[in-house]
Image 1 (cartoon, one colour):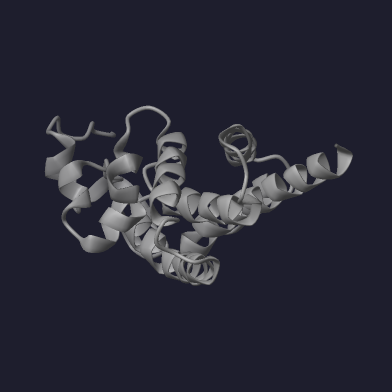
Image 2: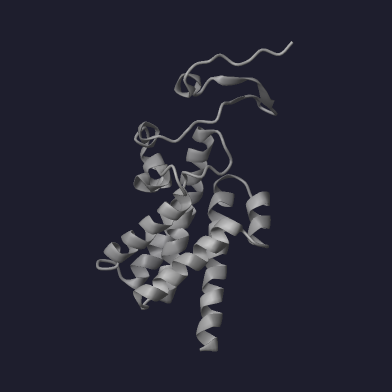
Length: 190
């Protein structure tokens, strides 16, 4: 006879094994909900949750990408192209560990509040297309969000097959690549 889990707030169950849920390594913890308290519990969570942009209850990936766009505009006043390149490469490889750590703590493979992947990928898009007008940046945003949300092949394949921090980071890198490809094809046609 199966019993229902106790009716207690989700925060009380955090870190405790979920009843009747077990995997190869034993009981799995119940997935956590990302909150401001969770984000502030570790510096890596602050980065992976996009300095709070991933905590948006509506479309956290879109809000994280908007944060990337705004932060790119601010930081571009201080960083050279080479410094941006170093930041993006370091952010990608560091993001594998950062996003993997936060995903593990949240108890899910690719939690939507983790938006560091969107930030790094959209910084790459903006770096590669700059200098452009605000309208062209808006189109880059729209195309990137399309590829990141819809995940057409092969992006969806990567999203399903690659797990952990690398999987979190790689599918957004693929979305950035296809965004840049669309922009390049559009530029060639005009």
